[in-house]
Length: 459
Image (cartoon, rainbow, N blue to C red; front, side, top):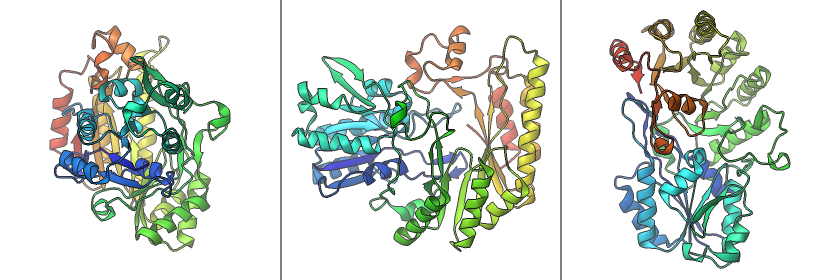
């Protein structure tokens, strides 16, 4: 069965003043699980396409796929100031594919998995896969081939009955959208297939090729997989946790096979646990790999030794989340919340000062307009940024306005209670919660601050 995998992400900005084009690492992992002897495979990455629909059509007509897998990386660009949905691009790609061939079309990816049924309804593929679906997509291809299905018209009756056993599958039956009971879960143990991606262009615009160190448990409107298939014990903080030896082996493989020297360690908290982080840095130094890398850093467990080891082993920049408003409870007074915010600011300020002292650049993403935000807390956050991202530091700031609302979240319930939105139906497109107390003046305040600081940006 001929398989075409398409990456539809075309957003090319990390911040409004700096271009970053993330490589579709998830799709590369999906490709790694497909047996090329059984299924001829082609990857189409639309990031650099001048005319993405024309390139889609040309590729489909030449390759004539029987199964098309489409990866949706982002629901939107995450910007309150200039919101842009990514869904119309993906829907246009699906429609163009359908105009050229009768292949079965399956959608997946991190954005699709955030709102799987809603995305399925809007995009109208033949099938959807929610979760990390690398192995599951390969199972889907094998099953379709064994059933002799090469087009969406063949998805009915006994075929759907068998397909419905795949974790994370979303499909239509008798006009109704149905979802398999468990979300797909991959161990991502095979190395990603990067052969069909334009690595030269990605080298010039990005944080580096992703290498997984640790991945946490996901949250979704789709139920998590049962314990025996989850890939980690329920009590574990991490769903996937690679050893130091595995990480170094993957870096060396990417160096050897693709001549790569810049990497992003995919990890929600590289420094957790700190012993692992230090051991990895020492391992990189002992191997004399001469690489550059970036990752995410949190406040817990960071000391001077760790930051020094990170710099020595090639770390160029860390991404840091700014202090957030503490969750409000009925028992808490406003002064208690102010005290908690001040404590959070102090912790992150210490982390930034430590990075600065060791010559490690950092980027802070600071949220504004959260529930409980006031003029006073906005001023406190801006004062924090003025210190930690002053002109004498190698620091970048993204000031994010509001929080993206998603169906079923506590924030969405609050938005409904306050009349910010009438219902949840519109939330597939970008809608943001911004605290009423600062909503009218917030963007202006932040744009003025960004105007005075060239490395600050407003989203």
